[in-house]
Image: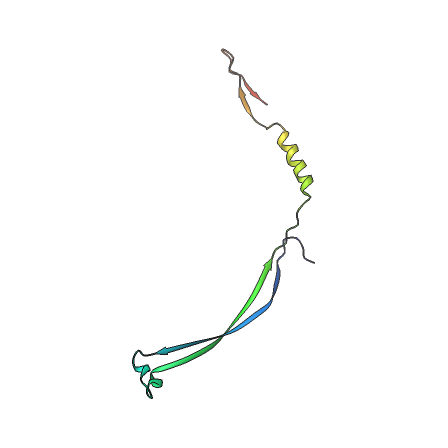
Length: 95
């Protein structure tokens, strides 16, 4: 079991590859008999591992959340200023 917003690490899939490469001097490495002196073969092992990081997040009941969103969106907005545009009136009304 994992707690909300805690990281879980899943790993263990490993792959080992052997990479081979050759370094050589152009033309001289192609001469028979002495060409081996002008080239070098190299091989190396490469290890790769796949690691997966998961962060679970518990979701709330969406029906309840939608109800609360609808409730708050239907409420009048606070501190809305309306000016009364009557002739000669400078009244400010807060609704």
